[in-house]
Length: 309
Image (cartoon, rainbow, N blue to C red):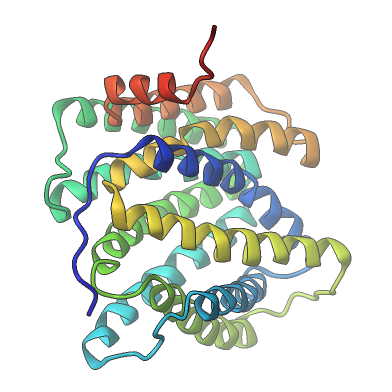
């Protein structure tokens, strides 16, 4: 067993690293949409798991991590694996039915739900009146996006609903992983979820997916980005942050992600953003910002800024 680490407020270095990860995560929905052009959702999911597992294994070998699973760790790994399967399954199926920009904005609400869940599960990470207000503001942004779906198509509405379910599961996954990382090595947490996810997704894909697929350069790039960049490096970095800092403060720095994702979807997928989408994005971002301690964020931004003569 590892000794329990005390989590605390986000430092300047930790915040800078979290922002770098946010930049990478903003391209995830785009990569998934490209991958879905050549492979069905569940098959694309286990492609991602396998490549992600290879990346994490290489890292675990490099840091000489002990990957032996102890009996007491089995229930924890089973819970993490189950949450991961539900999260990625609903995300891929949801993105198959909605736009990448809608998916990105809905994914960006997860800091709000992390703050809500952490209030009940993580000592010291309390839900204040300001955080509650942020939750309500972000929720109003979700309502605006769903109203837009009603005017567009039922299929997009279903896709957005699945994305919201995925985000709720992601938030619980983040909080549970933050607690589990105090006693289970990060490498085991990540590899456990990949092993569990691969087994489940391969079986389900064989049973339910009949759509044709083909291995193309675009699919290869999509799988590399999802598996190596996000599922490998991204998850390692995120769990490292969650082990050392309050989950709500780590998560809230992703508030820059939706704007970047919308612009990328516009440029790469020709998904032209509507006024309602921008309005919903603004509300979601404002809500996520309220969840963070604004004075702490301002001080951190001043420390990151170059010193002027």
